Length: 286
Image (cartoon, rainbow, N blue to C red; front, top):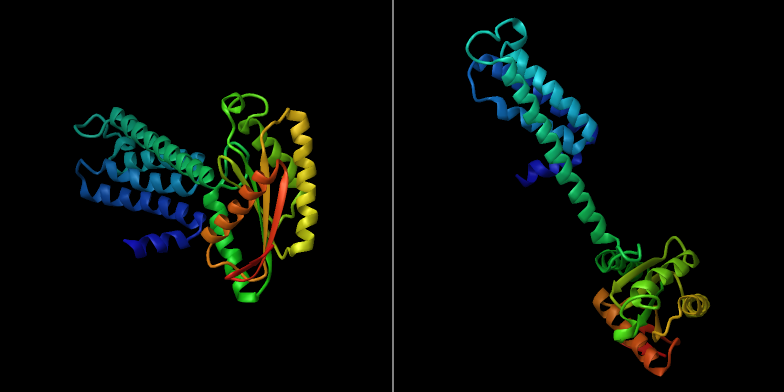
């Protein structure tokens, strides 16, 4: 079954849609030669295939084609509808069944796409989710280990709000999207910007060393200060930036170190920054 799934996934959508129509014709021939009832549900297979790998419009077309093929196979269009067996009403029922299959498969497909998108995109900020971030960060860590290239991990950590700051202007739900919109244009296309959790934004900057990172962080602080003024923001935050000249062992280690550094900066004072440089996996310099 796994081999069949892998084979199907390697094919183009056009090939799979064409396969659906071929199956419709083959099922029609088998249905005609079998000359008996009970074959109707099998027509749902190619219709579902076309809908899943094509569009809903293609699915509707396949449903109509399936109804016609079924009608031809059972003599509905050959003047035999008055005899016992298939009738025009049965044909309409078959059309309805296939159209229902199209709606069902299309709904499942859209639901799956939505879940896949929400697994990678944070709905509040529009940034990458932690799941997406960790997936891409693992690739960057592997690249850094292979080629010895540096990168920097920046964490912006907000203090948990009190009851008065939980909702409304100046709350995290207000600040997070505004901060994301302000900072994202200042980063490169190759940089990864994500929301790690309720209180944390993070950026991973490939090829960024200590000095260029300071410039980026100062820009971030200026943008966050502007958001603070505009949104009447009273929440404390800290920024931690770790430059890896030697790659960390894992994304978990990298995230823990960055969050710990940002929390330390937050305790030192709102808007404070702390920098570290990792020159080998076991050593960190401030």
